[in-house]
Image (tube, one colour):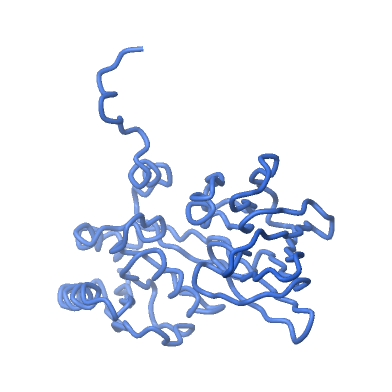
Length: 288
């Protein structure tokens, strides 16, 4: 017989709906012998690197999942995301479906997908280097007063292009359905090992998105003098940059473990979240 599954409930406690759902789930789980609730932590900055759990149930949207994963550091607990946000590519389990899936968790009928993360190193012209961990994307973009940027891109030390526009995104596979997608970038499978380079509002139509190997090192450098530029990681970390500062991105040795229950399909998620396969008004019933 399997021992009870150790489950922790995490989320953004500043949202009343998260607090209410966490209380309800904790009450319902506490009466089950096959699940051991190890705690409920809705604080925003708790160190989660030593979490006592087999699975961390994270209540919220994709932003909450990313913030939680960052707090786990180099010792992440497998995360199951429950969607209280909007699109929810990482957090795609509906609250009303969770209790029906408890037997799958208790019997370990789930898979853990180790998703790619990145290490971003900022080397300023003046001062020490700084290191950040990213999950979705690393972005160089214009800051107020929003002038046109010039960003040099090198891959494995080889100059590739100087981008002129509003900015440049380097996204992981899980980030390909986030900011990069809204900027016209391609969707790549979450378990793949590659980077997506997507320009933001490029000044020329010849600058197109690029997909390349995750085995390489990508370096972005803001070039234009007198233009305010900001480094943004996962939409949550923002650092002002100066011309000549170097931002390098490489695959991290620490992956991000996501729990997927039986029946999960990346393509079904795309159909559900993006409306693929649905007819536009007036189209249903048309013949070719």
